[in-house]
Image (cartoon, rainbow, N blue to C red; front, side, top):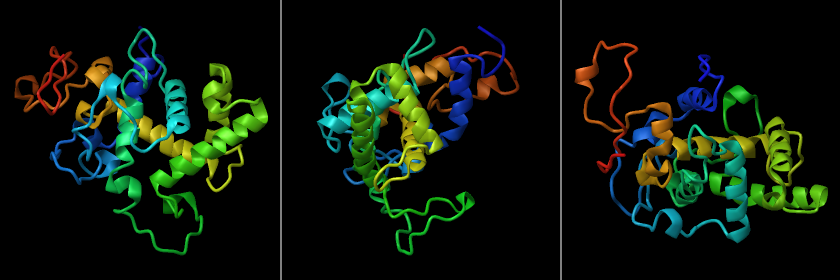
Length: 246
């Protein structure tokens, strides 16, 4: 493997992990309850921990067209390869769907009073749309754009064309009804990262594949045996909040 820290997929995702809130990775304050917040940027624990997971999971927020979009989009943001699983294999769609039923996705923990005026980027998020709205309106608008431009919705496009569309969204070069393209892309990318690196209790990082790929040890109780061993490879696999090991 090349020595440059960003010259491989593994190296790139290792650097990307710095952009994921620490609480999303291990979820240290998880509580099994029916009304909780989401992890990391989602402010806490998963409200849907009791749902069927993995291949048996059925979306509760996204409809069939939206679900197809989520799968097709996250598959291009983190595709699978020889170094590790892709976002779909890691359960990222399930993670995102679960987040839509949390206070985070409803904007319950945000200041949501007007006026809503787009200001300078350093002022942060200024829109009246909460994450649920961004996904519902954004996916519909992107599918309409793709159908008009390419005669097919996003999930029916070939991978290269999907990449072209995602690149245009990232640069804000697509005019979407009701949703700024760059804002939607940022939301999708951030939630994809979170789902790829979260503790599996939240629905993503299935079998701790993301953690294993970058060498993250997970929610182990302590690391006292490895203090001052700078640069030494950690010899054990990751552990989840529920105590599962791989």
